[in-house]
Image: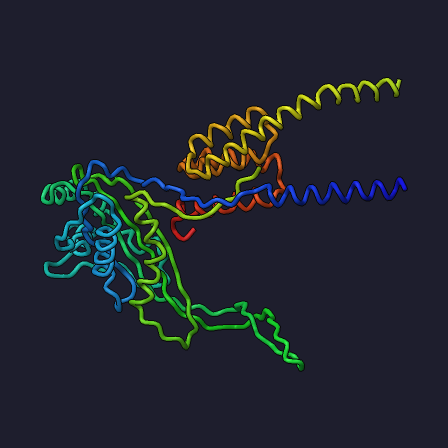
Length: 261
Length: 117
């Protein structure tokens, strides 16, 4: 009797606890505001000045990046007005700066950043990156355009090829027609692209660098799949655009959380 | 001697239990009020209530969890992290707190994501 009573009581406690649990929380939608990384209040205009590029010749990394960022900033750049001036010939300028004094013959084009995949991504632009620290140059650019916030940097977009074992799911059916999915390791040849842009934000009033942000995204496809490089470029850019925009404007991340009672 | 110790322990438990129950009860009221106002969008008031709840009962993991969510809503991510960590310190195996914290960390990672990390 006592045992039965104890069991009944414990069952009652369990049921009570479970019913308490089911009513013990509330799901609530949440919008988390993310503050911009740069204070853009001193600026009313933004100038996407152009990029030094390396990698695939099939995509004009400078032109496409300038177009994409300008259109994104027009739509989601908050109060900043986008300046539609021509992009600057940064590759030429940077090449001329990187060349040792007296070593270049007149008329010779500056050496472009290497597209060699054996060179590390960091080393690709080492020789030409000095241009972004040239305060006088950027101040002059800023003065010509009413001292905007200047966005520039480097863009590496290069093909990659990789082979190795990947895990896939294989669908099988038994004699009764029942479906099951088994993980399977297969050797695959894959190819794709790496996008590694580095955005430099410069104060057009002083020529000083305010902020630098580097991203790296990559995509791989089956070796027999043909994907145009330009569509891969935009796919990879799409992934990092929210972070780029969050440098200049407040963003909201939507989600939900569980409040507990 | 052993009996005396047991009696002393039981007595002390009896004396402290109502105080603890009162603190938890008061804190629970604050937590529930905070939820009601948060659902109406009054998040600053909710923060005040949940902060009060954590002061009344510093072992109330639910209050810290809710406080963390409210700080997230206000964009106070550093404060949110502290409150989540406190909630998990008190109840490390609570799946709902863990889930909230994981979602919070995902946002944090996205903000800080650079160079593919």
